[in-house]
Image (cartoon, rainbow, N blue to C red; front, side):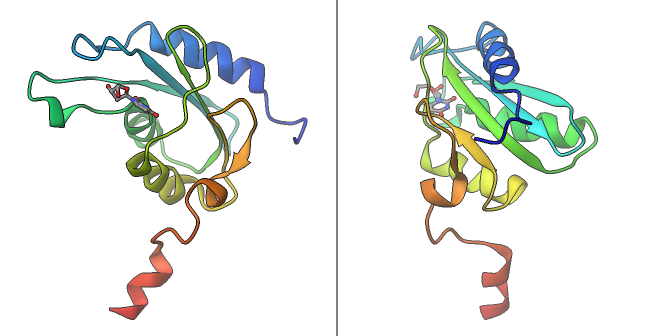
Length: 132
Ligand code: THU
């Protein structure tokens, strides 16, 4: 893995964010941290809703934080549960990470960083809009 990615800082930031999760329904607290291409580290946590289907994943909050704090591209993302265990992004969040980091964005959701293109092969991207 590239030494320039501060994985341990990302892990600590993700774990800290998981403490702010609002997950009274699943009781599964999740924190995500991302390294942006300008060097900043951003975070997100899951936010559930009594209307269960409206719950927001931690990666969703991360992408919101990315844009709210000035935008840029995600270089690396790490997600953990409240106990500090790795947490793989769901299908919807893989698409969010692809959009905001590109296929080379490294994602550690299972203890080993892999490009998002491996987690979402053949993902829908902007090039496909040309087929419309
Ligand atoms: N969750 C995330 O926040 N990120 C993931 O990568 C997987 C699942 C959340 C959604 C829900 O609030 C809880 O975990 C249980 O599924």
